[in-house]
Amino acid sequence: REWKEIRKFEEILFEEYNGIAKITINRPRYRNAFTPKTTLELSQAFAQCRELQRIRVVLLTGAMSEVPEGKTLGDVKHAFCSGGDMHVKGRGGYIDDEGVPRLSVLDVQMQIRRLPKPVIAMVNGYAIGGGHVLHLVCDLTIASENAIFGQTGPKVGSFDAGFGSSYLARIVGQKKAREIWFMCRQYSAKEAEEMGMVNKVVPIEQLEDECVSWAETMMERSPIALRMIKAGLNAELDGQAGIQQLAGDCTMLYYFLDEAQEGGKAFLEKRKPNFDQYPQIP
Ligand code: 1HA
Image (cartoon, rainbow, N blue to C red; front, side, top):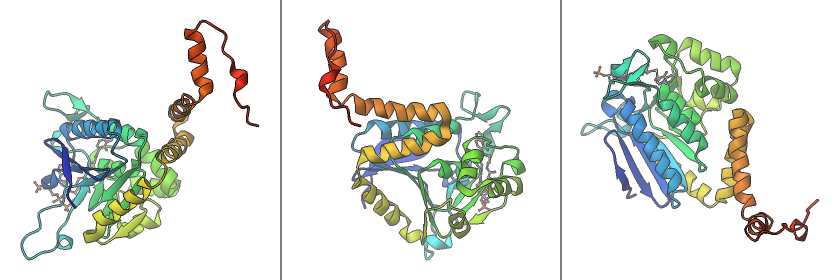
């Protein structure tokens, strides 16, 4: 499969293939830990995924570690993302090149959640800490058999009491969510699947094919139907901000109706609108 570069970045890869965008965190030396630059680049890539009409589904993954000659992919440890880069964790956040502390992965989480297109986490190895939260906020997670899941915050001086906790609890239940955070254990792909955090587990060699196949199936479905379902599932959990998104999509659809056009036309023509001419469906 030929992935074509959409835009060049330093710490991520941003590519496309037949309507599917693939965003790859590209710091395998550090188990794909993210710096403020990584998260800024992720934000820019997700913003572009929203704008590009030809992109219908997004895959988020981590770059594979190098495989020595004579070894196979499965012989080597890989990472999806190991969370914030501990080398730049400072007071107030992860320190960027200008010395400003940031927690900007939170913006990426919101973007994934708000993107009106499905996002699949293609988990190819460790999904740990802030990297675990990134897979959680994706719409679907497909993992390779070697994938390992877990939170580390209380062990390393951090926590994500936002989506990383409350949305986790919605997925795995309160008891398990508390166990995951309080104990900081690691869980296998199979355990994560049993907890409901993972949609499917496949051998690592088949991971990308499986994700592309799911993406291709979703691309045969109605994009607006998928968009509205995502907005509705979010709205139940996201309070007024979630309703705002769903309501915005309703407004978009309303603007396609003659009834909505009549209101604007009447205003410009300085006359009373005639809404009686449109069907009042019971
Ligand atoms: O909690 C938050 C946030 C909360 C609210 C708002 C924003 C947040 C933003 C971020 C986060 C967090 O992500 S906190 C949690 C940070 N992450 C971690 O605690 C995970 C740290 N890493 C590990 O536990 C392990 O490395 C591992 C389980 C992922 C893999 O273990 P393994 O296979 O034994 O590899 P290891 O030798 O540990 O790692 C390979 C290299 O990658 C090491 O470098 P080297 O010793 O060769 O120089 C290791 O230091 C580096 N590395 C791994 N993870 C990180 C990392 N370097 C920097 N930061 C990392 N997160």
